Length: 250
Image 1 (cartoon, rainbow, N blue to C red):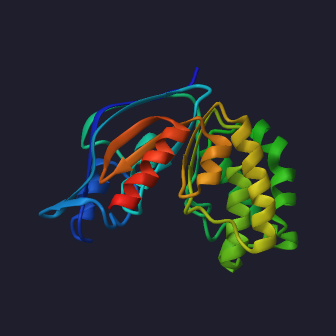
Image 2: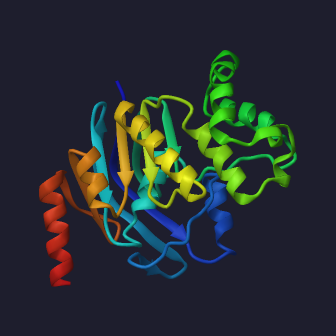
């Protein structure tokens, strides 16, 4: 039974390079640029405020809001990457994320070695890695480069390898950020087909996107974030309509 639960969660992120050290000390994680829409107080940006939600196994949830509303930050709290400044976080189930495909890659290791290292990070056993390794190599289409150091790869090659690894397992909990990209046009088409299959098989999904079509296709529930606060949590059609109407009157 998969579940993610947030109770009275607030998230403050430090503003400025010097103050990032405090974030790493509290919880090792990359800090995102807060962007517009957040409230800045002194050197701290109030990214999420009083977030209460529970997402259970079988639910597919769309996360909507304007740029800077806190969608990516909320996803990272759900993933356990960001620790809440205040409030409680609980997650049961294996979490997989599609935020960026190249984080954690070892540049001096070969593509084949990175498959093992990254898959181990995702929690796969040696036997499980062996079962998916050939599929990863085939999907990434790197040819002989698979045995060369990743530092020799182009950005697109790294992206293909990282994507193939990240989508090689069936997740219990899947978190997707729309900013995730997957290489050139031809590969992106294949990647979209693969993501669709993964989404349909996920036990619990949270998808942050600006695409109404994607929300309607995959999600029965919508959470609308506005300046780090939940404005709506409920049925997809109602949530999208309220969001659209708010844009017209803004």
